[in-house]
Image (cartoon, rainbow over the protein chains, first blue to last red):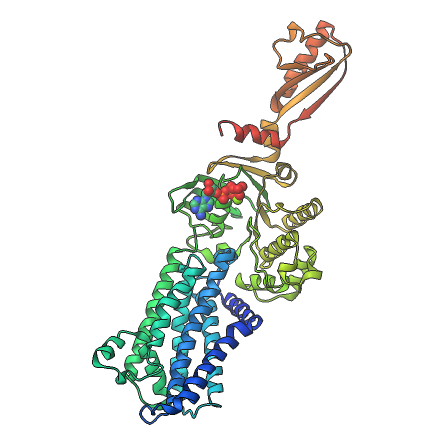
Length: 257
Length: 308
Ligand SMILES: Nc1ncnc2c1ncn2[C@@H]1O[C@H](COP(=O)(O)OP(=O)(O)OP(=O)(O)O)[C@@H](O)[C@H]1O
Ligand SMILES: [Mg+2]
């Protein structure tokens, strides 16, 4: 009888994905790190000195958590979407489909690898930002928790996009048309409390607001929405993505002819 | 022992409504080399995909070494290695890494000595650290075979293994296939090169328009369906076929020196002795006789070509 969990397969997928990241280090990790760091150098250090502090936090420090979240979000999606789309595109997916791996192993392997890579990207940015911006982290464990959960949830979303996409255009479609606007309007650069009431209400429909608010809370102790609510929203989002992926594997959607 | 492959009532209708396989029943014994023959689009790749899990089955049951592919897919798939028809392989990996990856994916613990052995047997050892995009097509195909063998499968599927492979390589590939069979591995291959099936297979299945129209031992098939020819070299030229021989299926060569008798391979004895007795009785002298068996190619064209 074959053991119910194929740990060797998870190991193989993780190793493979990590070695691919090493091979493409510049493109996969360094370039998002660089562009995010440029953001807070320009908006934080240069322009930010002319913008009043938000609460007790200087503007430069205020935007760092949101920027990290934005990058991590986008990278999670892109890592995971690409990781599963590429084998579909080249045809090497046949091996995964014919292997004794279930939904669980494939998810842990591909989504786990994507989440690890994007979490690493976030932590590198955080580390670099200490050199430019006066940062405090009041709740480091919560910070790691928020980061991890976000990476996992959006890697799952990326995985779904990678399976759904029928071409490189579609692969970019959702990130460009949905995620980028939501993430820019997610309160990286402002507290939604600064917005007029109508826009405040509308912002609450944007899930990214909850992520950034919660993440920023773990730095400075101030949140736009209650931390518990933030956590629930991420948790619920994660659960929905998990259900969709389970369905994909059950039906073979876009995987098996 | 349970058969390597057992298929009952297998059917496959693609999402668009096209039925690529209809009611396939097939059993393949352990240690057999089974060749699947059929023209383009007959359903060979679909059949292999249905067994290996790349194609969703829409009717019937398949088990591999006694494990039902729907009830216990993990055990069934662990027993199977697949080399697909198309060259699909990660261009930026090295043979060593990609073969090691395959072994892990199929749930086997790392075993560098085993990987080394596989790569050496497929003459890939000196290329083990070269990026796959720098390898030739034939080498890539061998890397794909190495990947399929990495987890020591009991059943190996080769979907048109000799496409794009030179004569030398093909020879050594058949050698490997025989070695694998000697080690107890069951091998199922598809091919368009019919001499190939004749050369390597123990049993042959012919598939056409999604139906398995025939499965037979290669030798039985040759005997049963092979038309044989008996050539009789006459001592003197004849202008036409002598009327007394009208009961036989005969042809005369243009120079009038050779009579050619066509007969079913199974019914040889009686026909031949009948003809020879008749020749003797009529006083027609002959210098030599020889027989020829039709090739699988001819059998195949007869089977598949009719009302195609
Ligand atoms: N994904 C698909 N969707 C719809 N029809 C398909 C699909 N894949 C294959 N078919 C059809 O199913 C039939 C059988 O195809 P298959 O690839 O199994 O043939 P084959 O015997 O392997 O042919 P070849 O010798 O050319 O490789 C063909 O008519 C093909 O057009
Ligand atoms: Mg085919």
